[in-house]
Image 1 (cartoon, rainbow, N blue to C red):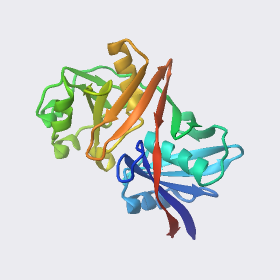
Image 2 (cartoon, rainbow, N blue to C red; image 1 turned 30 degrees about the horizontal axis):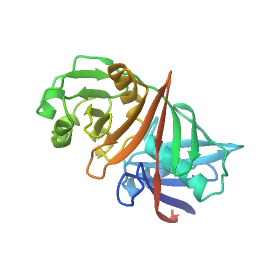
Image 3 (tube, rainbow, N blue to C red; image 1 turned 60 degrees about the vertical axis):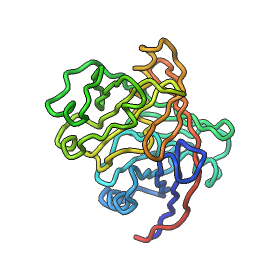
Image 4 (cartoon, rainbow, N blue to C red; image 1 turned 180 degrees about the horizontal axis):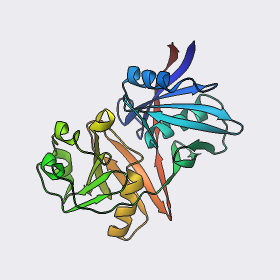
Length: 259
C-alpha cells in the first residue's frame, strides 16, 4: 500500500523555520497502530491524517509516541495542502476532530484557524515543576497544560529546563510565556511526555495563551512569537469561547509512503 505524504513548515513564510508537520490524506482509516508507526517514522512533532467525509474532513494528529486531541500547526499545514495541492477551492476547510468542529479560512498568504479557547486557572505547581526550570515564574496556571508566566522575553529565550525531570510529571505539556519586545507576547512549549522535547511553534498552546493575555493586557488581538530555535509568528484573536489563530506555511516535501 502507498500513501501520499506532504511535509509543510507551518507558522512561517520561510523554509526551515516554523514547525514542520507531516500531512497524510487517506481514503479510509487503517488500524491505529499503523498511524502511530508512520508518525514515529516521520519523527516530527506531529503527523496529521485526514479522511474526506462529504464536504468536510475527519482529522487526527499523532506525535511520535501518542495521539493528541488537538494540534494547531498540523491543522494549518493540512489546510494549506488542501488549498494549494488538492484543489479544495476558496471555501473554508471544515474538520471534525476529537476537539469538536474546526474551520480554516484563507486570506492571501495567511490561513486562519477557528479553535476552542482553553483558558487556564491559577494552580499550585506540583513538586519538581518549578525546580525543572531553575527560575521561579511570576504566575502558574493550568488547563490542559501548565502555563508558567515569567517577567521578560530574555528569561523565556534563555530557559534550559530539566527535560528528564519534566518527563516524570503529569498534567500535560509545559508552556512558558512573557511580554514580547517586538510583539505582544512570546512563548515556548516543552512536551517530553509526548515525545517532543521542545515544540518549535504550537498553535494549540495559543488557545490558552490568548485568554491569559487578553485578561492581562485588556485587548483581544495579538501578534505572538514562539521563540524556539526555529521560531514562528502567529496572529491571535480571542472571540468569546474561540480563538482565531492565523499563520503562513511553506511546502517542503511531497512524496509517497510505502507500507
